[in-house]
Length: 144
Image (cartoon, rainbow, N blue to C red; front, top):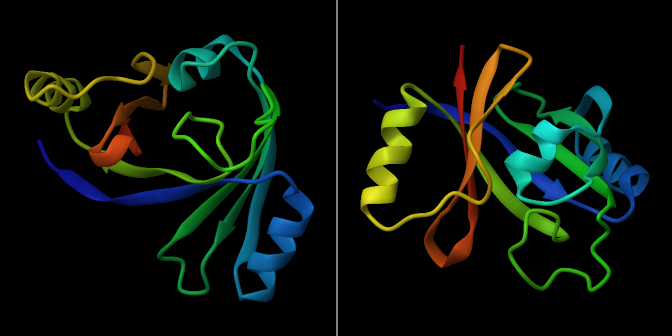
């Protein structure tokens, strides 16, 4: 069991277009844009009726990906203030791991809790959100 590398950093925003412009002005390139709404996403995030759109931006050296996310539903009506999965601002850091189940078991033994449930995405990834220090959200993702 080990972390292989940082997969991406997720940043929740209210204005997706403005965020894309900001990061592309810094040299990031747009790697893709997506919309997502599914029961799997609800279970991973621990929220209900989630509807998002997001852009994946890649750093100039291709060593960092930023996932800039707009939650249309449920919307964050109070601005950046808490540590829910849909709060504006930097909300989670994702690590690609080996043996996700073993890592989760070990974290649970140390008192850490999952935000939602472990889920499989399109038979390619097994993933979950875990509460880290200070309540930050850590995404663990194992490539299948």
